[in-house]
Length: 288
Image (cartoon, rainbow, N blue to C red):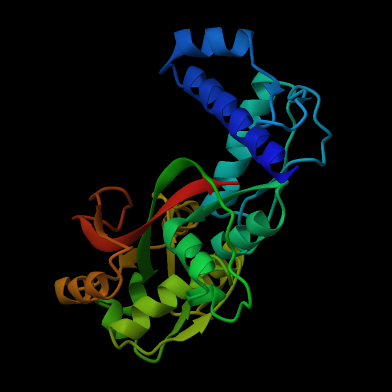
């Protein structure tokens, strides 16, 4: 049954991508031919009895999409992606708010009815019982990659009136790392590795913005696609300073964990970026 459901997922994700490409005007010819005659038959292997699954009439609670924290990029992406599929087909999904990429790996590994959004390091840690999964008694395995989404890059910022110059000025300060279970551990490791002792707090992105504005937290950091909606929101009403990692910081971090390479966020992406922002990234992708 698990193999059949996974095969169904792969077919549906392929159809969904075709419809998305059509909406973006990238492959109208392929979309037209594929959408008009979707292959809804799934044959079992070798001696197993042949099975047929009607992808146009799935039970609404059969397939779920593990997104992320409400207001975060994973949840936003999952919602938009599902809406695109539902606009072009009769397939229905249930998008669920979760604690983020690590919990999504666990959900998908344990339940074949889930599709999830996560990042490559989190899958690696789940399969090898390290990092966020170090206390697990069994590996979170049996996962298949569906398609890439975007590089999820680390970024740190504070209100300009704080007077901070770079990340090292956050020594002893209260820093919000977003919801627990999202990119929380990734960010914690960055601060610890470069020797900056912060007081980390876990908040929803909405609460993070409010806490930054009222001074409850001194800075906010996150790992996500850019532009990130909560930072854009803050810049509408406040002057923001981007707190940077030094070249030595980045060299040290990449040597310690090459699964998270160095990247640049282009100048102008945010009001506070007058020059490129050197940072690290994780690659996000969809799994089943």
